[in-house]
Image (tube, rainbow, N blue to C red; front, side, top):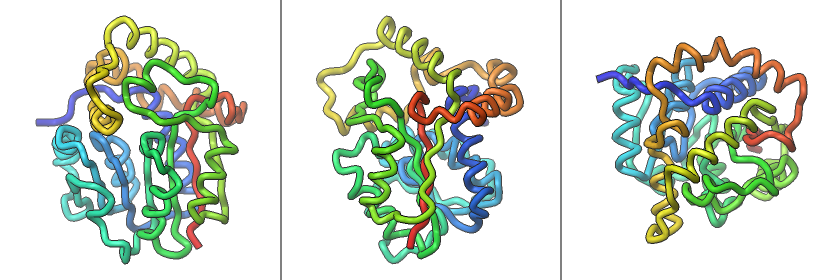
Length: 257
């Protein structure tokens, strides 16, 4: 069965930035995608010719990733239902990825250090995070975030993790995603409640599941409205405005030495 849900506009705009950074740095070869969720961005990495390993600790999210990626070339992707410790530190990936993951980690610097040890020298680390130190939302509570980031704090986390060269931080989708964040939180506050019985780790596991209609789940027909072609002008506007500290999502890249 094919994956039929439309992709949220924020995920598409984030991918457009990721793709641009990968091309700017001429990254080729293999990737390690840590916390891949349902596998949308993993599939996009495969679509531009990369191959590699995607890790997802949540059994439910992992099963959905298998469903999403089952039609792709199996020899180019290994899906692992586990944690980063499943991958030897002696690995030699060209690109280490953590997309909407480190904001869930109590020790984000150490987490990125662990990914860095699995990337070859002169490879790259690439992360995406929620932005806005002063914009904590109801959604952050539900999905188990520990923090948000500014461009400065995100760059500092990369530096402390041992990434000292070619650090670049890019804001995603301003001002369009700022509006969708307001809409998402309006929907979340009226339809969904924080499960206080769930700890941070359990809420983090659930965060990779796209099961909230109007927030991260859209009928397939919405892909006629929200797709890479229709959202490209919004990506151009975001590039022109270059508002990293007003964006709601940040993507950062740095070179491993």
